Length: 237
Image 1 (cartoon, rainbow, N blue to C red):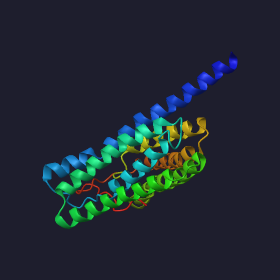
Image 2 (cartoon, rainbow, N blue to C red):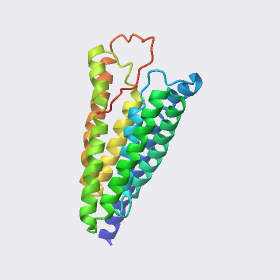
Image 3 (cartoon, one colour):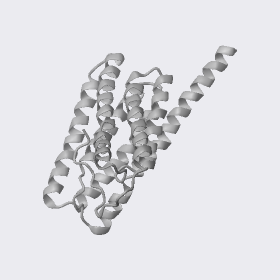
């Protein structure tokens, strides 16, 4: 009976970590809303870049597929969070395309087709593999590589903070949400014994902690407000 109770507590802890990751990820998904409210209000994408959302969509689709029972049984919470993320990113991209100038509109449409084409190839490649373990390994490596490069994107902001000695472009609550979400999924991956989840999220946890440490240090300095809002980086790598 003790082993049954221990197993039940272990399962509850792993699911709790996954649910917490889903909730915290939602905070990240809604964080670009002020940018897109401004785009809709001004009916222009101005100098904002749509590239981060294109890449985020591809990342969500790959991780969504990895979390599906056909690929990785028992981690449906990974699929659920990335399905929600994919909807948000696609919505942002559609808004961006709607208000972008013609050249950017064509470029973004091309990139969107490229994302779905790439995801279609990944689906096809994984479906023709009959060995479930090999299929999980293939999609797992792809999702891990995508997540690591996604988590590396804050390096741009970290460099900017150090160079300007200002945390203006690194909102505290966004950094905190990133850290807590990564920590939750790191714990979820550990409890599920899934290296494809805990390795990239472990890296994300370290980078999130670094952002919080930098915020704590540089927020002590006088902060000069820029006349212009921070632009989104054109690349997430």
